[in-house]
Length: 344
Image (cartoon, rainbow, N blue to C red; front, side):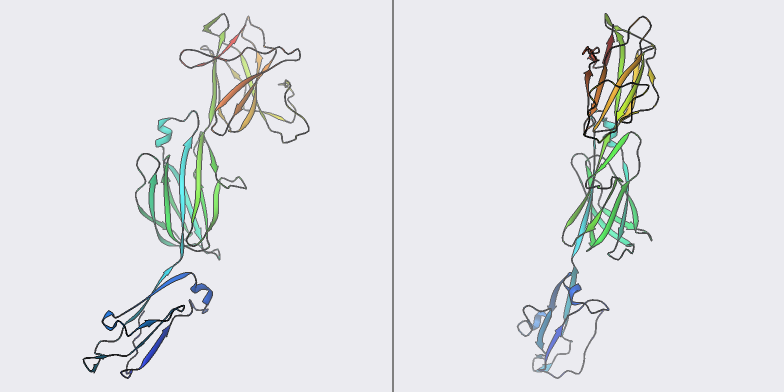
């Protein structure tokens, strides 16, 4: 907006102050803006800034001995202190494929002001990528509920700018089968990144999708590992216990595993090719693999197997001995990299 004050006498001194923002006249809110004051450069030297204030001082000048025919222009330009929000995607896991890396994951971004009112309108964003093609620069258009969607692949990120100070954000990812979503700073483990955008700072919503491990192996004869064995039955139990007063080193009874162990799905039986597969194991977890029925003509092992997954869902397997300390047959790997479980 512009106002023009006329009929000022030549030589009159004037002061123009900006001292408040909004209808409530808050001087505190003024601190959230940078103000630049400009004026007619032909009158340079006449106008002076008053240091420490958002104000300008000057005088109505003469032009060749006559009053100026063009009004003196004093322009206040206010630039708000705003923040940014970066949303990034990483896909990881030992069993991740090139297809997983190129898969597009969809995010919902929700923004509200500090009073809880949904923000609306257009917010520009820029894109980056660790490798490959970064997302295009564009505009994030928030609907009436303050929401918009964006898609990212592995290594991509976008930075949304021009977000008001103290705006609250929530970023959630649409569920994709076969992945565990890990969100930085997700204290309530609801897989939603949430926080407040601060002026002149960048908030981060980092999403890591861990490809869920699949424990797959082939049951084979120990005397001939090229011979698959059909009919071996296995159960997988997951440890779910936070009690530090006892350990879980001993064998578990598959018929009565106790409160610490929970069976994962149905039992698996080796097929005609000897194949057994337990899919979608969780990361950073401990499992116990128990053989509950041996193939015809073979004996059950006296021990069991501890299966551990780490943050990248890499699997490690260790034998757990029976009461007399005898260990079950160790897993092996053939020349094709396939996991084998020999039996005697």
